[in-house]
Image (cartoon, rainbow, N blue to C red; front, side, top):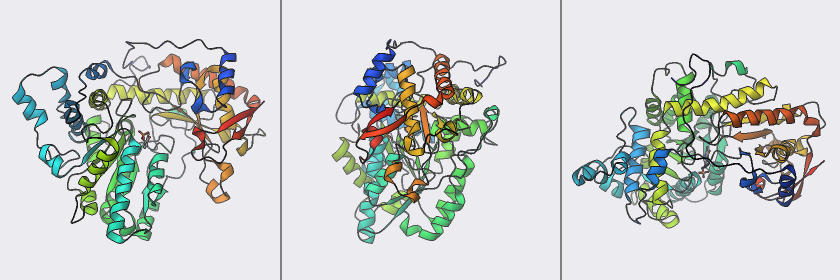
Length: 537
Ligand SMILES: *Cc1c(COP(=O)(O)O)cnc(C)c1O
């Protein structure tokens, strides 16, 4: 185990091979750039930053094996070799537990035995899992490669709507419950006239002692089972096309979901005969939490935990820009002949065929899904590397380290730390000051952090969630957080120390943090991406 050794410090899991120098930008230069980009975090040029915690999406540093794999990228339009390799990596990671076949090594090693390549890669006949092969993928398509997670969501929810309208008549109301819909997931569901419903566990912001982060975890990302059961009873099977479970729960501060909770949700889904889907973006980080903190799983391998988790799903959508350890990619996968396929196939048409047609119309041939062959090869390797225990313990350990150090400095950070990010509680941050909720203190904090120290973070609070545009009831669910999402494999302890020093300094001087006014586009949708702002000093 590489979490801690007898020295009481973590054993490093990787070292740098290529470096990117950070530019020497002055405070005045950052002030000018902030002014000219309307103080909007998303508009600030990344090249002028010291550290960037805006998102962990696609910002990973790739491994040497992934870079080597890029050279094997095959840009053929139909059935590039990476397609076979990627699909087999999906089987390896999500279905084969401790017995991965690692077919990508056939390509990386330059295998020339044609019979072997045909038998083990190009002409296999898999079926029954998430990725049919050969003729089975042609007649019953169930694996759809996409450029991002949201593209997979768009494929899935537009198809669900279409089939429901054909079966039950147009315009009927439907609901999709989730332990926490990601913003694009909720938006893609709503765009198809279905209502996304969040079933967070109560108590996300409840205090947790930082000293216990290495020994305990309350799995705050779990689905609220009582609410789910009451909801299923109230709405009934016919009005709920699928149940969703997001692992880890990004919307709830990146908190993990326990296997016990996954099993309980699966049991309810089975009882009500409703397909269960995962939003699987951070499945590997979630498995690492289960191994470290859930009773009965201490001795299990990450791979076997992932296998058990996914044995409970009828399908999953995923952004491979997260735990695919890659810069781009996503996908939608359905269990062959599973509950979802049964429910959404009609006498006329297999639902997989419907999905494949849309995939071709929107994202190109099904064997590349709007990705380059190079990206596909990097992904095939990344999916096998992300379940490495040393990598994962290093990853979630780094997030925990950042949270723990901030907590020791007295900074109000949500505890325990999630997998990919730490969140500051801005209500506690500004407690006792005259900063009101619609002064957007969280935004003021991110502006000062960037201006003074070149560190970019992101407000996820009253500004991003449009407090001023909402009524009293809608305002209830809005938390007041600032998120630091940590890129994978990119930063070391040095970067963490710099961040802790900068944030602590701002916390000490919080009375000088400016209130913020919206100068342009307050009524725009997704406004944190496009609104103009101004700090009032
Ligand atoms: C990132 C993310 C998505 C969407 O994926 P993209 O690749 O950004 O389109 C969906 N769900 C969760 C939980 C995510 O974190």
